[in-house]
Length: 276
Image (cartoon, rainbow, N blue to C red; front, side, top):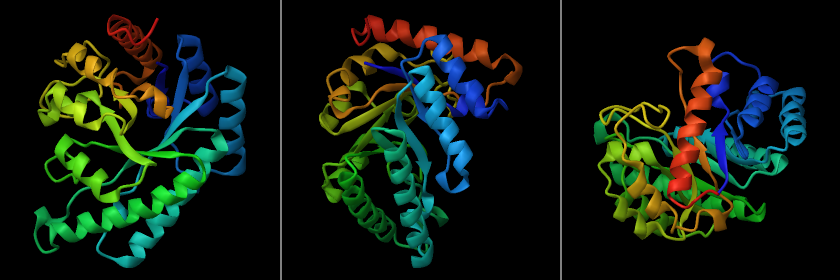
């Protein structure tokens, strides 16, 4: 399976687009995921991403999008975010990506005032529409499982229920290993997502709060999760395993931080029989 990196690791360390793409290739990654809002990019930046990835021989597998407004109680906000997500899908197509990684959001006001079922229904309706749009472009949407108490998709049963309600072949799950740890998910629970998992994020954490650390710096026992992920069909869906690193504590040493994560993850994948 391809091993990729989300380019936000470089961006948050203050490094430019071209630098990040070239370093990603130099370290040894097979692919790259792009965290960039197409509504904030001018034509030069879009072209730079395409040409630098092509020159480096790094295929873009996924584009990451946070669209919490899809479940907002204001119809105008939902319409804007639906159009914004369609722009993201167009951007995926432009880059030759396989999927849009979508973070759906959280219930507001502690699940009070607005009935939770209404926000759930808004999300389902939005993903039915976006699934149809993605399918027309030959793309998939991988929904992020977030481990936070008020997240709509905060465990495997909720993810499975949401996918059942959307019921579109272009809409599936992203598997984030450290999020599973934080959510208290047992590795065997992933079996219910077989054929419905389109992408994988991997990072470590301290078991208490979201961390996105290089594997080996936290408490995650990766082997049982990777054994289950290996049988889900992620590669068949065009997905990859992508390292997610956020906010390095020493931005000036970002190359060492990413290199450490690459070496540790590549070893884990080899041990799991997921990488030669």
